[in-house]
Length: 258
Image (cartoon, rainbow, N blue to C red):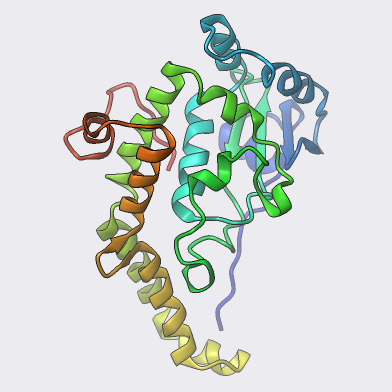
């Protein structure tokens, strides 16, 4: 039988992975609910920051001093590619024993790659739309919407977006990862199906939906997101080429998190 053993994402997880004390950690989820520590500082920061005019350089610099911008960007890029409809489950943290900036944690992707039920409709637009995001639009997204009005942030967002779409999320890489996981579980899958009373044909169908999400005939996830970005941000052909095709090089200073 197949069992999934996973680390619990709590203050001890962050402590062990970052080599900081649990007492130094603040861990929040959703719309700033406290898992560990105190949410007053983040609520104060967010309530203030979301109202700022991010086209003003000093306002953008203020936000950069409080959050890890690349972590924030990469979180949205991953959620956009994965098509996760349940972004209500979001965790973010900081430690007073590191740089004190907030960083985001990607978890609970049960509704990602949901091609069988939603095809390709859940995209970046659903994460940044005016009504909010997540289940019943309950997650506040005013900060990302404000930041996207800043030219420096938008340039960095699109540059990282293009990089990840042309590396981690290129079709061959994603499908290869799916195949690796299928191969890893292959020897136990029939016994697992027998134990839980489901057909192997059903299992194979679900695997095929994951691959169809990535590449369904001539339609692929990357191209959908690239064309959406063209529309969302009113990009010219030259800008699309700059950001989203392989000749766009990766800045040496990047520290990728996907």
